[in-house]
Image: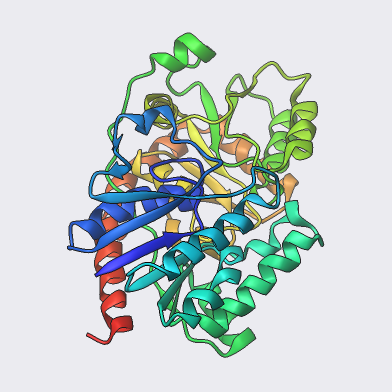
Length: 376
């Protein structure tokens, strides 16, 4: 079976949620004798963490091909999805697997060539505040409608997304959650030298810096509380330079707020391994890999009460009302003041989440779906 992946930036990578998913999932699919090709955008490069893993356009058993694109905000993803779809249409793939709604606008071409199509909805991207009521938002919604018409199967990550497609389009979808592997924990070393961070002395957020992630709520709340903890914002812009500038303006008078930019590898492992608590104040999520990672590293978590978070954490996290800065401030102050509460939340939470979500299970369910699409 030959499968082409379309819609991501670059694999292997941690640059975003989709990239993280495919970097974890594709090698497991290859172990199931699925010949996987990932169409990487020509405008994106593999991070230093993964450079040594790529040789002769191969990431292990995964074939890497370039999808030519224009390196410009709002155009890069759209152009790459069409150039990848054209290439895949003229190749001998059994299945073309699109990731995210926008790239699905390119589905009619491979459909015309008789290709079997699978799509994964990693989130309702047209809802993201960074797009507003722009052409990009309308284009993503168009991609969603094309996907509903053209895809042989649609994978969603949450029950709420499943209900959305049923209620909006009468379309049945398949729920396959994201997974997580047991991480290797790291003592504070690089982060101490680089940022002055020591174990249990900081709160952190690991996320793209976009409005729907609620970073501005967290900064507002942190500026209100009384604590000697630092706040670490680990992430970078995602076509959201104005929003990031606003965040840094909010933080400029507080020396205990640290922006690290995008981090990966040992630096990211150290940040997760030594945090006092991890926050996820999102308004919108598909199924957050940052949330899974935080719990897998054994962290206490404070997150918004959206269903995509609560179904993951169950009773193993502290919740605040979505978008409610007063509630977030109160809960954040409580957790800073009550170390026993934080210590209790950390107990066994890694085993809890690793027992609940597994990349191997995701690979098995995905491979089974591929076989169903091919009729065997």
